[in-house]
Amino acid sequence: MKTDEKKLVVFFSHAGENYNVGHIEKCNTHIIADMIVDETGADIFEIVPEKGYPVDDYNECIEIAKKELQAGSRPAVKGDVKIEDYDVIFLGYPNWWGNPPMCVYTFIEKHDWSGKTVIPFITHEGSGMGGTDRKIASACEGANTLTGKGLAIQGRVAQEDQSSARKNVENWLEQIIDNK
Image (tube, rainbow, N blue to C red; front, side, top):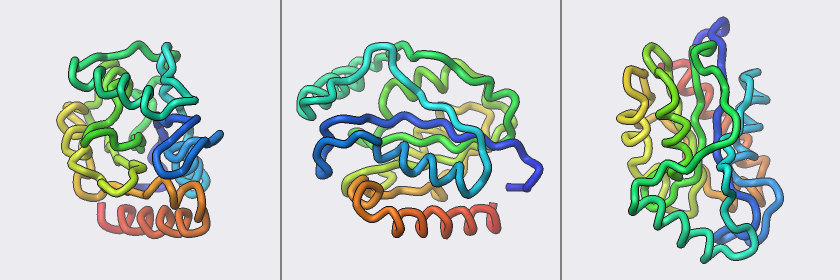
């Protein structure tokens, strides 16, 4: 990344009842997205599905998300951002069964990614990147996606050890800036 490149952090995150961290108000991926914004000065955009996921029952939420995945759904999202105005897009999401949530694909498919640098970051509870970076690279046709160089942070760390999460974000950004 060059200092003069225009940067954007785009993310989807889920509040409410979450696996391994209980009921949360500020979502795991949102916490990491804000840290990236703090470190890079990037603009930020949140992907928000028109029909939100249940917040009080984790199992109900994952059942809906699993059905969307199995059907290859593209749930409608609220708002948009003009990615054409940016050079570097950090793309964040939770890892749900080795995939980004389907609303992330809805967002991706609205845009022309030609010539963009896409940098994935995720939150998870043990699965790490889980190959989601390769799926993002395939979906963001024409982009230079930093496959294998994304950031994966456990949701529990994002919620309960934010100083450690911030240090991971800082170290990761130093690595990708120096080695991109």
